[in-house]
Image 1: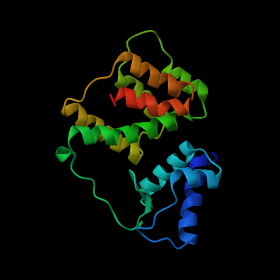
Image 2: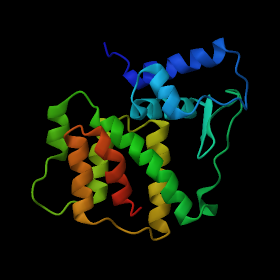
Image 3: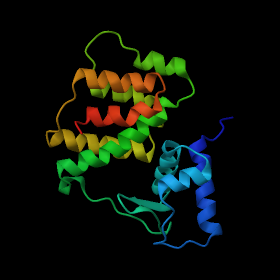
Length: 192
């Protein structure tokens, strides 16, 4: 039996808090720094919990505006990716890749992480490394499917390739479970 991860427990706790406080769509949660301190968790764990709540439709995390409560019954239609400029695709993919790589880095089977992502000395392509990352997560999850759609569309628009050193750094961060290194490694891979 798998125990829920800390960020999943935290997401449930925050959802219960929203309900208990009677927060309504448009209400804001406290700033992340204060919320993490009040809850006694790292900002990385809080960030993962907020992403989980965003995927569930409970929150919308707005850059510079914080986490805003949403009506969970309201459905958000994704725009057709044909209409989204490359820079927005890459900015969105930064979020999906970071979350997926973080999930892979906290995969409890370090031997599997090592087997999938060990450096064999050859040239490493992002697609190969990313396939391994997805095997360590739920490749059929909404997040993984959105990431795949974003990657395919970015490739069609001529998104830049990644340097082997950057790909190797991402693989190592996941393989060694270095969660704090994941965001920077993803940003480097995407050229940001």
